[in-house]
Image (cartoon, rainbow, N blue to C red; front, top):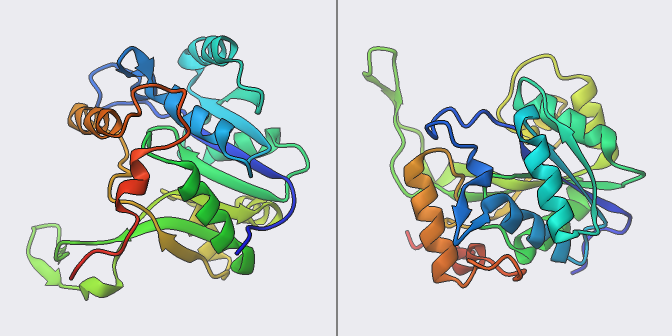
Amino acid sequence: MKGPSGKVGAIIVAAGTSSRMGGIDKVFATVDGKPLLATVITVFQNCPSINEIVVVLSRRSLGQGRKLVKDHNWSKVIAICPGGQRRQDSVKEGLRRLTDCEWVVIHDGARPCVDTDLIERGLMAARESGAAIAGVPVKDTIKIVTRRRFIQQTPARQSLWVAQTPQVFRYDLIQEAYRHADNEVTDDATLVEQLGYKVEVYMGSYNNIKVTTPDDLEIAKLLLQNNGRSSVNSGESCASVSATMPTR
């Protein structure tokens, strides 16, 4: 099965404050001397279906980002731009920089264990519905609790998935979603859902973690090193290690 036809743009969102990283911008944290952001961009650069890349950074990191792109000479990176106050504001800035794209792949710059297969499978999944996101089924029992931490409800585990990125959309669909955005959301799919569109979830990877804390960074380093990803010259990743359904 082939992915959708038409030009594909990628937005790598890396404009967060890294407030839980002790003053370190997490996307410039290093594995064997190489920033995690370089690992992510290289995967998108090496992905055959990606035509252009926009990198969204915090204003204080723009200089580092521009130097990184210059040093690596990534031909698909067409813009490095400052983000906004919220994640969705940053994505909106990225969308403005894409040129004549029919499809958009949005990925968190703090998820370094992405690989080309995960991107390509997202594009294939989005072919029919116009919107697809990576995700994994939850392994643990989830409890909905009150503010006083009393259990209110135990939802059925088989219906619960953890949302990840990449998230893939038809360009016109995600543009419409952002035009109508009037509330704060934590991922792009939510805005599309609010318009009444169906969003498919395709199997992601349990290794496709998001680096939020110093502990996450150490885990990501181990995953990358164990899968030969300490060098940014590779287009493969630890994400492919666990792209199968879990045993229940």
